[in-house]
Image 1 (spheres, rainbow, N blue to C red):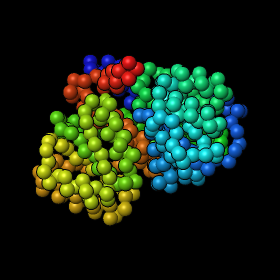
Image 2: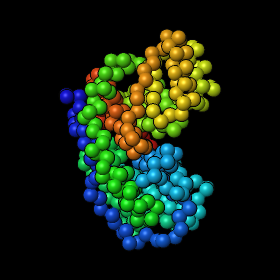
Image 3: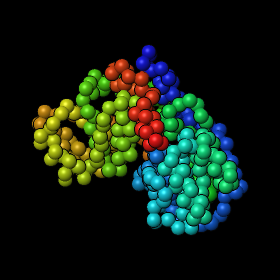
Image 4: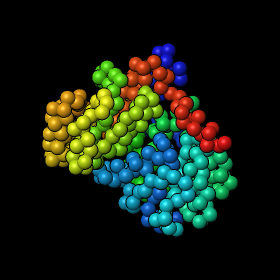
Length: 335
């Protein structure tokens, strides 16, 4: 379509196939065998989502990709205080130019920590090579960084397997994924909601276990459709945010992510909350989360959120790929 000048549609159609891409692992033999007591993912935007994914695998006890050590995500400069010599630092930046991630890398090298990384190139790849850091190069397919989640997951699985933190079942889970989640099959269902969301702010609610899925939709709507979107999760929202709907100050549309694996009490909370909100004349829709296990649910939610935001962008006559405000902000930050 005319508004889709960068052909994001084709990227979405092929997104799940990224998990099976052949990736180059540089300096693999340089990794050390110190005992790892935690993993810290350093990244921003889509590059930080790998930490959230790994936490989701742990929370939902998805055995093939669940680590036996804590996983932390660092979205800022420098490094947090709760790390030590047995922390594995994984620095991720699609472009290799993310200044917060470069800052974290520099701090990690100063502290002589164990570091690995993922990037397409840029300054970060040069630093990886300079310091002989184990890192995985992901393809630079002229796609927006946020659309490279499959590549990034495949890369981090390679790294974690190399450190003995995951076994071969992790790789097997990735290889079989494209047969189970087919983005083309989700497009029409997602497109239906574009008319419903017309000039309304989407609010996404999920169970606490699925907060990362709700957040994925929020990010897609922000970056592709260029609109504000917000998320929260049960049961916490029943103790505070729900009251805020007593006086709605703008046009909103609520999307409830329903999962067959949610606790019965969470399902009841969702149903009761939806009724209360409808009584406040607020539009509410339930969308069923699909997939067997955490890996399928993540990529189902990603594809659905991409389609929803893609068609909403076209509905508004917006090219979904560029993030001009982010690029403008980066230029201002350099001044």
